[in-house]
Picture 1 (tube, one colour):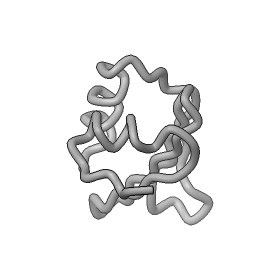
Picture 2 (cartoon, rainbow, N blue to C red):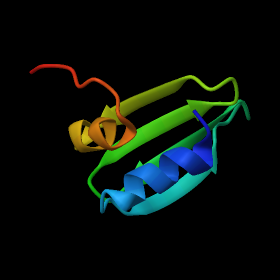
Picture 3 (cartoon, one colour):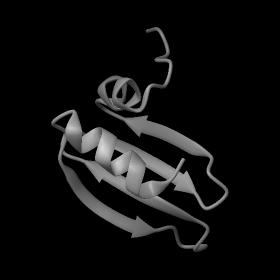
Picture 4 (cartoon, rainbow, N blue to C red):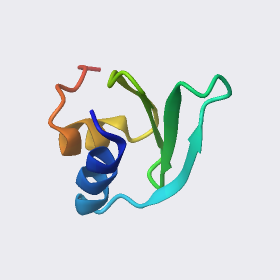
Amino acid sequence: MDVEKAIALITAAGIELTDRRRTPDDKAWQLSFSNGALVEIQDAGKLSTSGNGIEAVQDALGLPTKPG
């Protein structure tokens, strides 16, 4: 997924972007959001989520949420 598209979708859901930086290996973007969620988007397009509030972020991105 494209970084700008992910940011637009998540912020449209009312979740503020608080930090955007490159990973130390310069192969991905790390995005932090006001609800505690972290999103990493690799240059190849692979996306991963972690932290508190990931369900809201996954929902905003149209990703399936993990139960539990």
